[in-house]
Image (cartoon, rainbow over all chains, first blue to last red):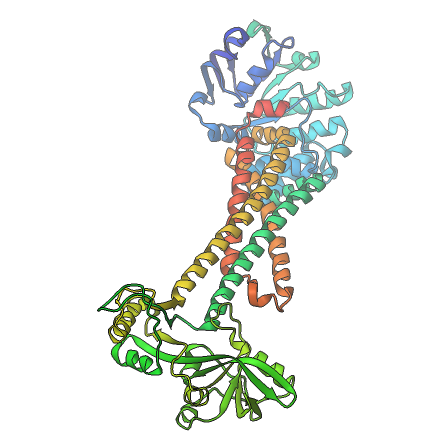
Length: 223
Length: 410
């Protein structure tokens, strides 16, 4: 599903040059639960952004579902992000002024789905994460665990093939973290591909494959 | 849905920035009022100038005899010329371009008396055609001089409206008698009030008119004061003047190019000057208004930059979730246009109100009545749209070009 060859990402030039990624080779298969670990500054987030088509590599090849991402323009990348990738962030990134329902609906609006479809799908997703009763609450009225569940529902809105999570339990207490983990496991069982950046040993334990990054290179393939 | 989303987003943004939004919209309102009022006053002023000019008559050429300045056919320079009534009839016969011509006798300081009221006025002896040429329209009950008055040398008089007020106050004058240097005259009509911004010898409202034939009999004038000529096509006034110089030059033996021999006032020339002034005023007013509006536009640009700044993270998030550049761009342009639209609509409404209640009165005959014409409104709307677009485009482009990774991290 994801193939990367000699991916490099360099920021700045001259003395200010930072090599964030130095020749990453990755192969993530469909329906894989993939963990990405490493200390801060190791290049995890940079790699994540490239996998998520939010950023493009300085050099190297990246194929997403066998499509060469390098040849894509801004709008095509936006379409891939919208339809193929679901993002889950450490700090949830919900729109503070929008309700739970509206937050989940956003990716479907960008896709151009009709109001009726959006409504049905949104309620289905909120039901799946156990928040159907909180559809009209604002993020400020939700707990951290609930906000992350809204974010997961939003990530699933357009039924993406890849779910990309950046420290999804980093801001949550253990109990809420476990709930989120359970949801992820469920998604994986349903056939989704998961790529998770994490420090949480519980997550990395359950991942099928864990890659550790250090100084922009892959240190070891744990499994 | 997108437009609904834009709208609710707009309301939220503006609510979050109440004072700034108010000041920005106020700037646009102010700019709109300035430009609409300035243009409206400009249009009104232009119309009034034209109307006032036509108080004197349309496209007239007025001729006075002068002194020769070029020796000609054995006659020296400095010879004073005098015109007679016949000269007008000569010109009428000789020159086909002439539509109307009227000789005018004039005498100043004639004592008019009505019972105990006296007034020293200017009396002019004219023909009935004068009415058409000089827009000497009688008020409802009366009439101007007619051909029978001329033929019978009747002692009838047509009064300027101010003269009538001096002699009769609020009473009606028509049909009543006044004396003119002791000779009784019947008032046949009173000038209907008119706007006039130029004159020769005095404003029409302070002048009185009697038949030219009566005038020469009573006062014994051999010479007329001046002639007024109206051509079929006022645009050909230059050529008409040339012909007049030729014909009169031949009769009075002065050089056909001797401009001093004949003093000419061509109203078309004055009209051109006034119209140029009117256009100049309009350009000036439009510029002032446009600059005010541009200042308003800078305010809009400023608030939109702040909005983009404050929503950078949200823009990044939306881009991560699949919003395309065009979506972000149009969202911010939409907000800018909404601000200008709201400000513009309020500004137009207020201007309309000001123009509607603009006090009519003395001042109106000089500056005219401001007009909110379709043209003025269209200019204002087009300018507003343009300014909205220009001031919004920068911030919107900046938002659309944000790097989602950096934006989301901000």
